[in-house]
Length: 177
Image (tube, rainbow, N blue to C red):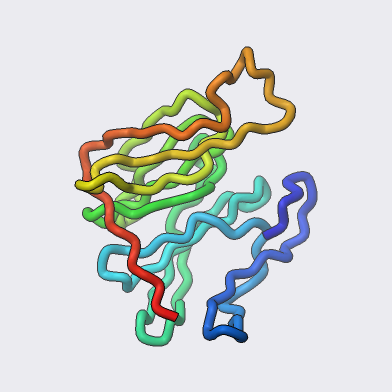
């Protein structure tokens, strides 16, 4: 992940943990890979590039048995929506939730890539969203507290927020090394 948002080196890549000593590079050519999430059946993998020069979200066919993505296609061009794509989650209806960093929004896209709704949070930089709680009906959202933020302007920056979007999330599968 290339962290310098002012630069334009596409050094980012996505790797897969194979064993205790092996990482396999799945794909590269990204600025700031982010927003990884999977459809409810695990057959579609989503990921984004958060860098201002990209701001794209892709969908891939995903082979769960081999851990291999294929058939990359543009899912959402976030340049058409407020905020850069950041952390993401998927709900039980198969919709993809992505933080709109710099815009103070969490966007929900249908499996077809259509914007379904946007929820506001009281900070400019939501960073990651994840469903939780006993019933998986709470969408937790973390946020970034930039070092140069005027706390009078954003006193809640860096906080974690709990939203109730009216849909249930998916539990994360356990990692089996």
